[in-house]
Length: 398
Ligand SMILES: *Cc1c(COP(=O)(O)O)cnc(C)c1O
Image (cartoon, rainbow, N blue to C red; front, side):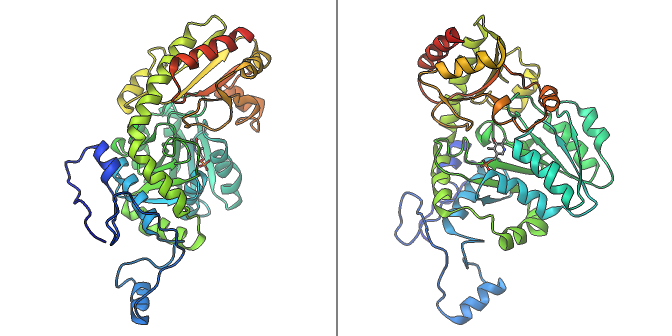
């Protein structure tokens, strides 16, 4: 590998997003290369032996190492301020690898109950099959985290801002509780992305991402990332990933690697548009509630300003008239798509009660605040005036 620029310690986030992690090949390409290869050849049998023994570096097999994937991991680590990163096929592969690589029978997890549906399935349904217990808490209530801790607690898990209610967890306070209990705090940072929030600066031990969302940012490829310290990688993750194979395709890693170069610019534009749309919605008679972390009426607005560099691209709101009105609004949209995905350049609207949160019991939904009139809008990068006009005419139909 030749002619990489030597990274400087003083490089700022935007420079790291464009320059960090690059490994140029002998061709000195300016743009990072896509190494679409499963395997690697050795000059001699002795070299293969030495690489397998770990005596010399170099790649062996793309299930556990690939140059394009390594570049993506190095750039993610630089942006999150994490010692090491491992990329996975999806966000859920990242989450489940953290749990399954490190927990054993008899141990215990504490998690904020407002979380992505599949994360809840892993904690509530898969872990108990292996004798791993869990306690769900209201993530905003620090006393509940404290009360849920047991001597066997090894991992604390939370998502901030959460889906779809955009409630926040105090990262400093929860990481202190984890530390005092000899446990690790895992933060799902998919909604904020490293451009808006770097949980390790507030004490988180592990960060997981669905890079499918804002890191790709254009709705193309699935991916996930685990960021952690060397001890967790060496004791748990490395051998688990190597031997169970949740690996990301080099192609998807390449898409997400190149997307990181524009992440900061895109997130600023998402935040600007989302703030405009949130303010517009708050003025509408048929809208009974607007939730956006950087609006002064968000109950944790002060915490949002401390932990985040922007309010994010998602706005959640409630229309009067329940499910029927929410459906009329969704069906009247002429620009915004109905889709349960988020973090795309295209604005996407979903009705959580009947889609992402359908599998919860009515009581569990009520406890989260997921009402029949609630809608989650992932605000894209279209012109904010066009988005407001579309919502305006759809609200009249509702
Ligand atoms: C989408 C998402 C996931 C799962 O990611 P996939 O890439 O779809 O597997 C996990 N957590 C949050 C907060 C998400 O939005």
